[in-house]
Amino acid sequence: MPDPSGFLRFGRRLPDRRPVPVRILDWNEVYPPAGDNLVREQATRCMDCGIPFCHDGCPLGNRIPDWNDLVRTGSWASAVESLHATNNFPEFTGRLCPAPCEAACVLGIGDDPVAIKQVEVSIIDHAFADGLVTPQPAPEPSGRSVAVVGSGPAGLAAAQQLARAGHAVTVFERDDRPGGLLRYGIPDFKLEKRHVDRRVEQLVAEGVVFRTGVDVGVDVTADQLRAGFDAVLLATGALAGRDTPQTEGRQLRGIHLAMDHLVQSNRFVAGEFVTGEVTAPEITAEGKHVVIIGGGDTGADCLGVAHRQNAVSVTQLDRYPLPPGVRDEGRDPWPTWPWVLRNYAAHEEGGDRVFSVAVQRFVDDGTGAVRAIVLADVVVERVNGRGVVTQVPGSEREIPADLVLLAIGFEGTDALPALAQLGLERSDRGTVEADENWQTGTPGVFVAGDAHKGASLIVWAIAEGRSAAAAIHAYLGGTGTLPAPVRPSSRPLAAI
Ligand SMILES: Cc1cc2nc3c(=O)[nH]c(=O)nc-3n(C[C@H](O)[C@H](O)[C@H](O)COP(=O)(O)OP(=O)(O)OC[C@H]3O[C@@H](n4cnc5c(N)ncnc54)[C@H](O)[C@@H]3O)c2cc1C
Ligand code: SF4
Image (tube, rainbow, N blue to C red; front, side):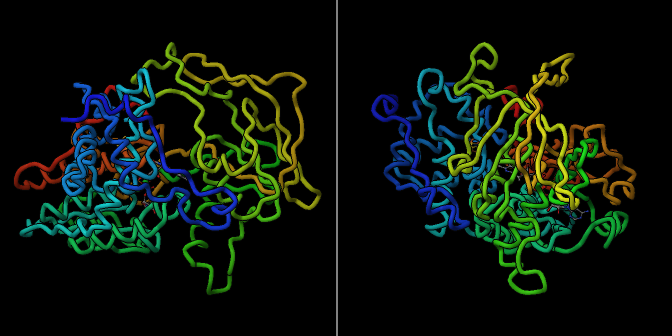
């Protein structure tokens, strides 16, 4: 039984991030590993509240109080077993999840919540260090086969679940290496790629075949996949970046989608530009005044990259007002996900954040390149559920900008030839719809992750990958049932 008074003895503590002047000189993760004593102390703050709302806050339904107590008593091996029962890749979520579980922690009503995410990542790091994460190949083959299209967290989670159930799984990935956004979207200072490589090795040892550099719909048709496999899972992500073509000056050189910047940077950090004709990223912040349009995760990642590329200045623009520092109980009562100011590690490293502004136009330097942005203060009001933006008269001003990065969201999955070949259309949100069994309108074709939910989170991608795998296993007539999270739509707290 957990220690019911641990939270009275210990406050919430996290390990210090590496010092800013040191960490912006490299691309390594900003957090050093936490010591066992700190983690066990933090796990002790979990108070056995009776109804663990954190469970419901976590889209995976992670058994948080169970593994908190196992860590408290130093039972690391049992803790990772409990964690792996619901989460294939805790090293990704433990590093990158915004932790809706912590927003729903009962201790958070009157105190700081338990540092759940820190405990999670420490459990899995411990397990890898102790050699406890080993391949778990299926005892016998099922004789059925599945093609997974896309190797982001949704595709990887589904592939692992299905392979462990004995199905012959082939993952098709159009990039040259597996991982999806884990590999080429998220920078190394948030997730070093050795974590992705290590899991891919485990999947290969469990029998999963990876065919990289294969664009399904182009290099191999969807019909060929349907003919060659008993089921197909689309886990193609939501990579269609939102643009702003109507803004005056958008065609100027030096204005890019954020993902173009991030992919080049990640490839550079991976050593992919060391040989060959191109030896450095073409889109770089070095020596530039950088303006990032968009105040979310992607924008913060561009910010951290820009610091490491030696930008002269970085300004991040957000059209929404400065959020409050703490939960507004009237608007977002506990245990819902609150609208609060999110400070990422990159914000600690420098740069300016400007709220309640919108770009009016991009200014030409006379050679066809951007030299400045004209912006204006705005007010965003919700009218009939939609955000209506009104400009504040007389607030227009110019700021220098010779690299502009558009981090204003995604419009669903790309308009892939594979979808047309399968007779599938994208919804108004750019997603591929599925029935309650994760099956699209085309029999035997399933969908999971951002391609289904729209641009979201790693924890959701893993949850949907597990759920789709369980549905595919049932469709294939597999023995027993595969574990899967409770159907997301019935999780009242899982609002993000
Ligand atoms: C910059 C950035 C930072 C983020 N940071 C965080 C974070 O800190 N925390 C968090 O929880 N979430 C974060 N996210 C969101 C998270 O990365 C995604 O929600 C998650 O990766 C979605 O997983 P997925 O498997 O559905 O798709 P993806 O990870 O997008 O993977 C889809 C894969 O499908 C492949 N593919 C597409 N079409 C084809 C085809 N025709 N043939 C073969 N392969 C194909 C793509 O190449 C890609 O590899 C971030 C997103 C971005 C863009
Ligand atoms: S996956 Fe995210 S929500 Fe679930 S326990 Fe981990 S940090 Fe919390």
